Each structure stands twice: as structure tokens, then as C-alpha cells.
Amino acid sequence: MRHVIALDVGGTGMKAALTGADGELLHQARLATGRERGPEAVVEALLGFAAELHAHGEQRFGEPAAAVGVAVPGIVDEARGIAVYAANLGWRDVPLRALLADKLGIPVALGHDVRTGGLAEARVGAGRGADRFLFVALGTGIAGAIGVDGRVEAGAHGFAGEIGHIVVRPGGTPCPCGRHGCLERFASAAAVSEAWAAASGDPEADAADCAKAVASGDPNAVRVWQHAVAALADGLVTALTLLDPRTLIIGGGLAEAGETLFTPLRTAIQQRLTFQKLPEIVPAALGDTAGCLGAGQLAWDLLNRTDRKEVTR
Image (cartoon, rainbow, N blue to C red; front, side, top):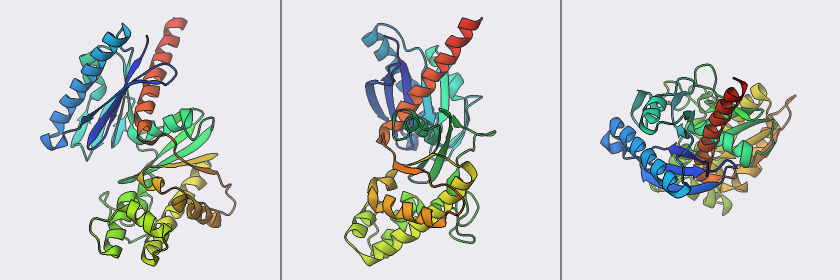
């Protein structure tokens, strides 16, 4: 049975799958990233994990995987197959495509984790059928995937979609990027967790706790939440003005608050629009499988391009 390997590399864990041509997850596995052992050890763990999946697929389906798709965080040069920079993994200029191709002997597609997750949401998730979409993940940081006609735009240098670094509060909280007042310093799950921990006096409190407190009417939680929603709406309206998507898909940890987030966010965005059209605003549907599903899509896209070239020779 023809299949591909899909790998989603995160700061603490790697998720993997073998997927069929229809996107079905035929086999799933997880492995700790082990970043405490250093960046080289993470690469070795990834290569070993991929080799195990390759062997499992050949044994189970009677043939080796046809390709592998990999989603990684940070700055990614998809054209050259290089993980340019990933702070939480300690990576700089890691030639992942070449390393995996040498290890497995099959074609490799490399993509950015959020763009890859957005691709999956657009094709088989919440944005299925949308010709133009913006997928925004609200996690430790904030990043987006810009979708046009079934593909995700990486940009000229691999930076497209980094909306978490739109400045929404000039002169505000410092950001590790070097600027002040970036969107992700106010509206990411990490930022809400930090703000609620301070407001509640509980250093262990997080964004999920804040959302629960909002739902129960806690005025301090409502104030923290309103500040985050206002900042998020400001950043998203800037993105909507530039991109004019038909569908806005919101995912990541903060989106798990459901209508506690979506109801005030839709209202806040609507209030800020003038000439712009309000897109359909929907929650992501695929959860933490989006990265793997998207990596599988990258691998199948690569094979389809290769197959077409062979046919036209």
C-alpha cells in the first residue's frame, strides 16, 4: 500500500504518522524531542524516529514509504530544505531535507509547523474548500498561515505569516524579537497565562484557568481577557486588511476556550472594520493532529509534482 511518512517536530515532542493518499492516518507514534540533550541530539532523534517509521511501514504495508513530509518550528527555507532557525530546538541552518533523504533514500518535503497545520485545516479541516484563508495559531507565540488556492504562501524568505510580531501596542511589553508591543506579547496563550497568573495571585494559573474564570464572571479574569481580545482583534484586522481572506481559522491553545474567545473576538473585529469584509471566523478542527496531517499533505504534494514531471518527460 502506497503511503508517506509525516513528522511534526515540536519543542517538547515529535508527533509522527504514516498516511495514505486520502490523508488517512494509518499509524501514529510520538517521541520526546529531548532538547535538553542539545540540538545535534534532537536531529539524531528525528532521523532515528523517521527510520523506525520507514521500517514499520515497509513491514506493515509491504513496501517502503514513498516520501516524507516534515513540519518544524521557527524560520524555514522550504525551497532549500533547511531549518534556518528554531530557538526552542537550538537549531541554526540544519539541512533537514538532505539529512533525511540520505537516511531514508526517499524524497523529502520540509515545511513550517504553523503553515503546515494551516494547510491541513484548509484541505481536510475547518477551512475545507476555502480558496483564500488565514489560519492563526494562538499558542506559546502567535503565527499564521496564508492560504491561496489550496497552497500556503511561505514568502520570499520563509517569514510569511509571522503576524505575532505585528506591533499592536507601541512602546509596550518587550518582545524577544527586539521590538516592543508585539501581538504575541498580549494575545498568545502564554501571554494570557502570564497576565492571569499575576492578576489572580496564583503563579500556576494559565490561560485555560483564565477562560474558566471568565465564564464564571470573575471581574479580574474578564479584564485580562478583554485586554487580550482587544489586542488580538487589532492585530487580526491589520492582517485582514492586507490579505482579505474568505475564512479566518483560529487554532492553538487559546482557541480551546471556544465561544468564550470566539464570541467577543467576532464582535471586536466587526467593530474595527470599516470598508473591509468580515470573513467567516471558525475554530480549527484538527487539534494536535494538524501538523502531522499537513506534513503528510506536503509529502503527497511532492509526489504528485514528481509524478506529473515523469509523465510529461
